Image (cartoon, rainbow, N blue to C red; front, side):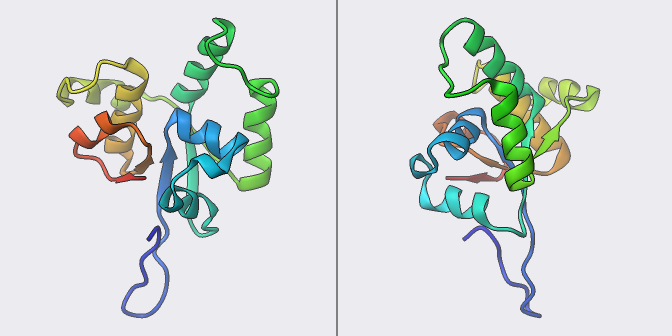
Length: 141
C-alpha cells in the first residue's frame, strides 16, 4: 500500500522517485506498471519526482534511436509536470559523491545515480529493475 495511515488516521505522504522505465510507462502506458507502483503514482498525496538523470538517459537513448517515444521528450516531461504535478530532481554534488559508498551491484551509471539520489534525499524508488533490490533503498513495485 503506497500510503500508511497514522494512529490519528491521517495519511503519510511519500516522496516517490520514478526510475526511467517507470516514468516512461507512467507517461505512455500506465497499465505496464504493477498495481502497487500505479497506486503510488495515482495517490494525490504522494510527491512524484523524476531525476534529471532519467531525462538525460532518455535523451541519449532517443538520439541513438534506442528509445522511441510517441512525442518529443520535452513535451512528454512537460505534460507530466502539468498533469500530475511531477517534480524534477536536479543532480547535485552530494548525489555524485554518494556513489563512492554504493556497492557495485549494478553497473548502469544512470541507475546508480538514481539510487544515490534516493539514498541522499530519502526517497522511495518505483522500479521493476531487480538489481535495485541489492541496495538499501526503499523500493516499490
